Amino acid sequence: MKKPVYLDYAATTPVDPAVAEDMIKYLTPDGVYGNPASRSHALGWQAEAAVESARQQVARLIHADPREIVWTSGATESDNLAIKGAVEGRDNAHIITSVIEHKAVIDTCKHLEQNGVEVTWLTPGLDGRIGVEQVADALRDNTVLVSLMLVNNELGCITDIAPIGRLLRDRKVLLHVDAAQAAGKMPVDVSALNVDLMSLSGHKVYGPKGVGALYVRRSPDVRIQAQIHGGGHERGMRSGTLPTHQIVGMGKAFTLAEAGLEAEMDDLERLRSAFLDGLEGLDGVTLNGSQESRVPGIVNLAFEGVEAESLMLGLRDLAVSSGSACASATIEPSFVLRGIGLSDELAHRALRFSLGRFTTSEEVAFASSQIVDVVTRLRAVR
Ligand SMILES: *Cc1c(COP(=O)(O)O)cnc(C)c1O
Image 1 (cartoon, rainbow, N blue to C red):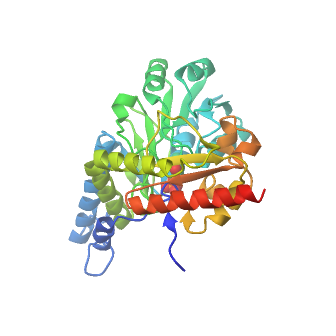
Image 2 (cartoon, rainbow, N blue to C red; image 1 turned 120 degrees about the horizontal axis):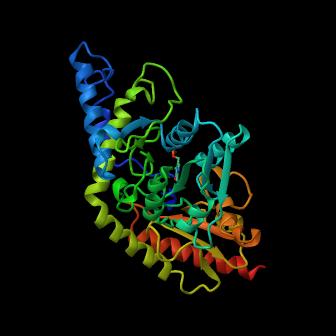
């Protein structure tokens, strides 16, 4: 079978070959396979040095101190650790989040809600963005945490986090930001944003799956309760033997992302324009989410009179997604699109196209011509 054109970079990215090359050095008998916690021999020390160097690499991309980085198994675990860890042990806690967060945040908040934590669910406008006034209005005396994503994984829109961070710093409320779709896709600076906790993932940035990090601010000092107990790794915040190869891969991936950020953003903007230009022959196409405040790699489009499910079947040569990957096994319309106020009917007509580092001009030209053909054919047989 011919390989489809991959336009699902927001679901996951391939590992950059330079990342894979570094990872293998920490796996095999001729490599540095020691346990980074082993203090008694060189293979342990070398593994530890590799982990610490990767910690610096990840910290650098978000302008953090390496001591503020806690390794996890991915952004899902980071979200769980940040939210549960901040709330645990606080009586009568209230948290604020939104209805278009990633499931890792939504389901964690729902779990806490079932266990007596009060949760306010903010609803964005059609642009997919939560404003600082909405957060200000929802604050209560017992609010301990606000959790909002920096870039939405279905729409690509960017939340204006900085003013929310300033507001919460003054009120001594913690701010957690899921930045899995933002790191390596736009400049991210934890200090400029006044973020206390930030979730990161390896595999959205050309690193391996199964590794992530949580940024935990040191000044002012943020305290969270561990959710996985064991050998007291990661200063007690997350136990478990560190997966050296995964961590080295994530570090390398974040370094590549930092070095190439501007050029890659320009490239993606150009590819995105070419993709949309290629669809100009079609009418009845709507771009969902903010048109201005967005990352260039994610394009969410609704096609009038065409069901996304039929369109996806017709687009067999493209790897795309209707909503988030976890939801694409079901035919429920995307909760994110419903969350920004689209009707079920419109939400059923939307597809997400996400472009990335290895996307070519030929691929986007092919993709748009396929879409024009299939949409035209489906509309004709209505
Ligand atoms: C992919 C993603 C996650 C989950 O990350 P994993 O590393 O796969 O656990 C969380 N939040 C957002 C916004 C994502 O895009």
